[in-house]
Length: 247
Image 1 (cartoon, rainbow, N blue to C red):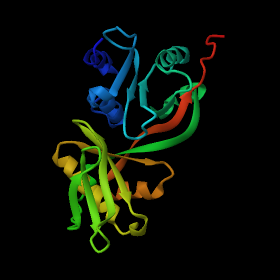
Image 2 (image 1 turned 90 degrees about the vertical axis):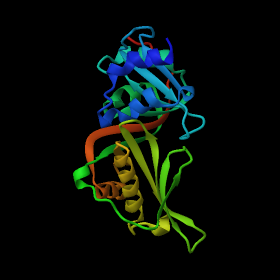
Image 3 (image 1 turned 180 degrees about the vertical axis):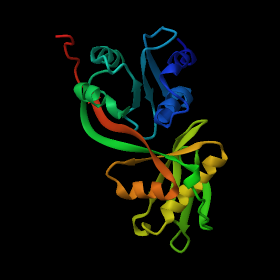
Image 4 (image 1 turned 135 degrees about the horizontal axis):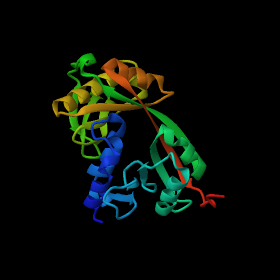
């Protein structure tokens, strides 16, 4: 099957209007063809039962980003799909729905695991922040970025908001604030500028934060983001040797 045929076979597995599926949709359907590998199951069926995707990103040069939608109610079938796709001991980054945790913990050697809260901007709570210090440029991934610089200190980047990814309906905002300039509203200002930019482009801004990162969660809420109640796991690990299933 061609890549487009694989995508067509997988479309019913993801909801392009649902923030919880937005990142998976981006990497399955809109990410660069030359950096994407898809494994729908069964391989040649017009409608897939599940899939695993591999994306080469800037997150880690040596680990692909792996996302999946599998029949997790059937552990053995899901395991068959995983082992048909991945080689044991190959380092990967997994981004999966939280309810996939039992499956992943059973078959993957986990190095680190982080729970992410997914926020979506609620327009009725959003108020643009006017800050004349904000400038717009382009991030390393070629997507827009909004920056505040300290012009008295060699144009030091004080805070910046970029995009981890964007697709036709959604985009995920990232933010970085220099430690010396935190708790002064700079992070909120650049995130609000990016959110306003995305709204003007017709996209819904998304924001993720680790469940333990109170400062990041507070920033999101101050801008007008609300909890979607979706939880994702970001896992660094590798597939264990294949067990003897069914015994």
